[in-house]
Image (tube, rainbow, N blue to C red):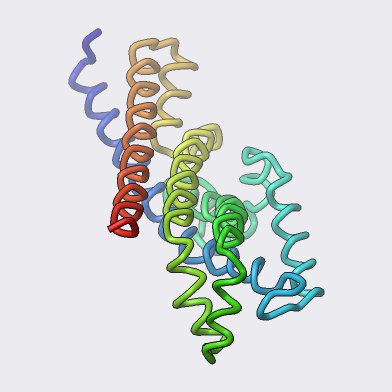
Length: 222
């Protein structure tokens, strides 16, 4: 199943577009999603920065955003996408819905990882005189490192899937290539190669995440 030189060129361009979209949106998602996850935890009832109105508002926002299927979400945020990117199509424009859609997903995963930190460890830090800021940076985040790395890993894999779905609205990347050539023009070879590349990307991301988590576990045991 050989591709022509022009097909290989299209495949290379689409792969680079997908890499660009996923890399930038993953960075932005982590920078926004982890702090949001921290807020979801520390503002809970009985935690170090208890704030019920803020906690409920954030939880509602996260749940409401997560309830919207991503293809619909892309259309829903198009006005904001045009405002920020100047257009609603293309790889750069697609980063906006990718990031907004994944941030709430990342926040929930980060919240789960942070809630696994025993509260007794936090109480011990409070007894030692640590400030709330010190507890977050020196206790919560370090203790939850393995869980946070896995949360980032899962989020990046989700972004790969989201970026492929963005092809339906001209978002570029491998999803756009698979739809325009593999589906609409019945070029099965391109469809199969595209699917193989997406599978390989997901496997590589998961393997790297597992490796990093094992490294943290070994250091702790040592």
